[in-house]
Amino acid sequence: MRIRVLLSVTGMLMIGYGAFRLLTYVRIVDLVRLARWAVVGWVVNDLLIMPTALLLGAVLMPRIGTRFHAPLRAGLLALCCLVIITGIAIGSRPHRRNITVIPNDPIAAFAIVGCAVLVLTGGAELIILLRHRRRARRAGCRGGR
Image (cartoon, rainbow, N blue to C red; front, side, top):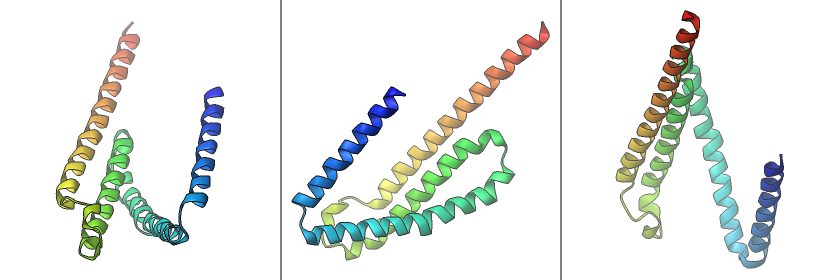
């Protein structure tokens, strides 16, 4: 309980400091640009990522065993977000004023992060499988006595 209170107070102090810095050091033009960026992020989340996640959940989850739900959910959502963000980066590259924002090829970054997501999802599934087998072994030992 104390840790939650400490984290909450720390978070509120950090938000207050960020708001103070935002209002005192950032120009109005940059605030408008920041607000536009935040609205676009909200729209991308609510109109692309969320419906895709709901659709994947509605289509795939009933067909998959419950043991695979957690890693599959995490992996599919991460890959979905990765595809959408990479698509935006690739699509906006010709229109970008400052080419150094994303200095390397987004396709290579997509491949690397996609492989990392698959490895982490597979690792999570392996951990779940090992825990399941360990529990089954313990339950078998207890039942045999």
